[in-house]
Length: 265
Image 1 (cartoon, rainbow, N blue to C red):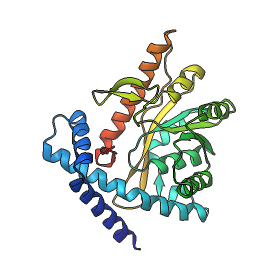
Image 2 (cartoon, one colour):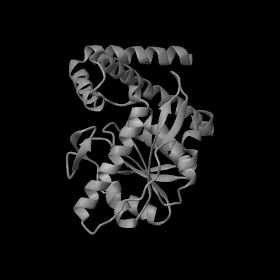
Image 3 (tube, helix red, strand yellow):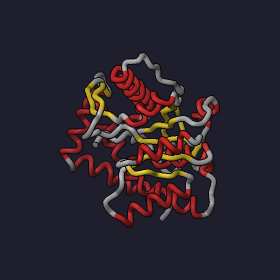
């Protein structure tokens, strides 16, 4: 299928989904009001519609990425690193690379792993074993070793203690043991594992994303300034401050390309 046709149809289906699924649309418009209170309702509707169109393009990205990795292709042919070059150059292993459901998070993770010469991450396991094996194969081909969320933090910590880079997507609701801090002005139950480990070991953190450029299979890796979390001796306060600092970096990234964020989740 020609790229223009495949991505065009995927985008059209995403916009149609946004229009027809009232529950998901209400989620998106609620979150967009938090993030962009000065925007009009029509502007927020357009952002939500375009963001859902981007989401529907992600499976096509994964299919093309599978072919690229199978041929031994270089991610640099589809992922421009110049937007994060200076930030990545200032880091020394081990460090944490954190991202969100912005642009294409799989491209960000595999691109970050290839740049680092290999990396380890934590992710949820798909209930579909065939889909899970396909995803894991893609990640392994890109130099990314994935550990399951249940019990995987220990393996990730061991890998980082040995000098590896840690990668994680950290913007999903945490049903168990989440840390409640503001995200776009509203309290949210947030991921704690990466910040806990970074505080314990003094690992620097960089928050980045692979932003789609144009309507097809082309991206730019962008990143906020790396930072190291401060410790005061108050573990609970340090954890909340660290998670809030990560959220603020994610918010800054999302504002660069709000039409590519997963507002409907």
